[in-house]
Length: 253
Image 1 (spheres, one colour):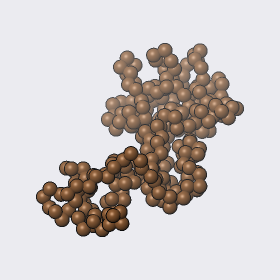
Image 2 (cartoon, helix red, strand yellow; image 1 turned 45 degrees about the vertical axis):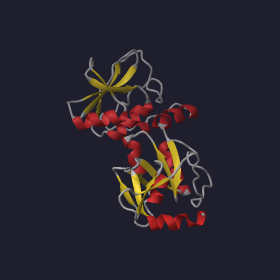
Image 3 (cartoon, one colour; image 1 turned 135 degrees about the vertical axis):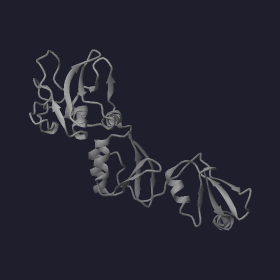
Image 4 (spheres, helix red, strand yellow; image 1 turned 180 degrees about the vertical axis):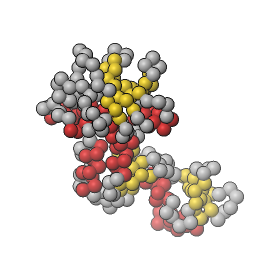
């Protein structure tokens, strides 16, 4: 699917416009990236900055840059003054190869997607850090290509091995330094406050108990590893044998 990239003026601002023949797969990808459709210009567009341009180039392969006419608009944020969208005849976009403004603070600001990803660090699960973020295809691909990073489809979270090398790789991909805690031993336990685990007798079978657990990944993962634990999608609880629950609670009495 060939996509033509143009610099456009829309809604009182410069935008990156994407023009292509209708394709549901491409549209689905653009929506995930945060693209907006313009009825008047009949194209999809993004805010005109280096972060969005890099994201587009990483997601789509067959891009053709339309040579822009000279305008009075500002250059693409993060590129050398006086240049517009990179004029690469082959259409193979390489934003990283374009000279950047000699300003470390500016580079860090434009290259990091962290503020837009809504990163949230969740309670640890054993030897893994757990976090979630808004989906970006290019970022997700890099994360899952990293050894020690896994995707948990049930809870829609990323699991990262609590290892210094993995930590540094993931933080670099996310553009968020010190996102994971330093010197974090995987043997430490997460403590939950103001939360309750409710245990009830099964109304139909006295050999079983119903266990209702707060919706935390770390708790549910521990419960489902109990001997003979069964999950009920109808009641949203775990079924555990009465004998097992009794033995589990004996030390408390």
